[in-house]
Length: 424
Image (tube, rainbow, N blue to C red; front, side, top):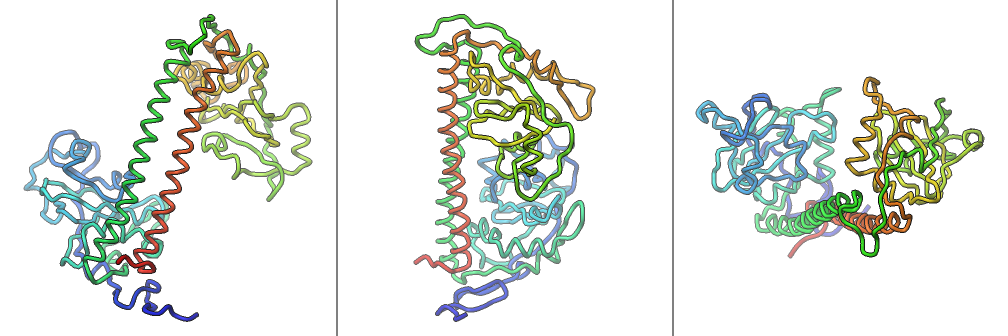
């Protein structure tokens, strides 16, 4: 394949002729963190970075001043901590332990121009600059390309817990624009995308809080929609729905056929990537009743009480870990589905569950005894359900946009951090 003009082949792929390949050992010196257990952390003392906090972070950087109040603290004399474990502005902190290979490349870039005392802690590897060849903002992105992540996976060792050593991190190579100004331009372009993603995440969180407040008001009758004044009544779930369970026998799974739903289908909200059973077994399992549009399926073993409203033509079978709720025509299945997310419903599920069972379980008879406080009028149930469904639709639209922006960012990183696309 002919090489693109102005580019060259390297160990980390094709990059521009004027770029270079550097190992992390060329630009960083490495040291360990100051180890202490999480139960010694509190709200007082000096900021402390635990490797678990790196794994949990949705970002690859931390602004110490801005996030100071949220950072765990270690209340000790700072003189007890080696200087190499104190984090400066631009330091990169990698985890040296992970539960899977994917987590082996997890890291945080420290933004700390005010020099606030910040201790790198348990299972961390501190990377401090040897020179100024690697722009501080560029560090937030240059370890996130697929090629760099592959190198981290290659050097990660272990079975249940994987780890990576300072020696091996030093061997990892990255493509690097020699001019810091180009690095800064790349980081700025990517940070604009980050800003879009962050603003969307905040908007989604705000919309979810608004919906939660609406649920508290509308599903309890504290606030009534215009035009409704009828009474509410307490009903057992068995009064408003026919409750069925799935097969008690583990079916014979096949590569393709009819979908077979389980607890994971509901908890992951994923009814596409399911297991499959044969047409013949599906026909046998559904000869008495089947999942239909406007039904609700509810988890009853393990994670109990999670419900999913069926708004599609579901030609599927289901396991005993699920209960099928066939809502009677006098009631709104959408309303019941929204109601199942309320604290009142969750409490009722807990009260009727077999608390001594491992895993936790709720029997069909007890599901029928779950109490619901609902409007007498079907029209009011439907109106409340429509308001909450519209809120869900708005949130889902924003979530799709968020995923799109995240994919755009991934594509931009692959282009910009390898020099395939240059910024002028």
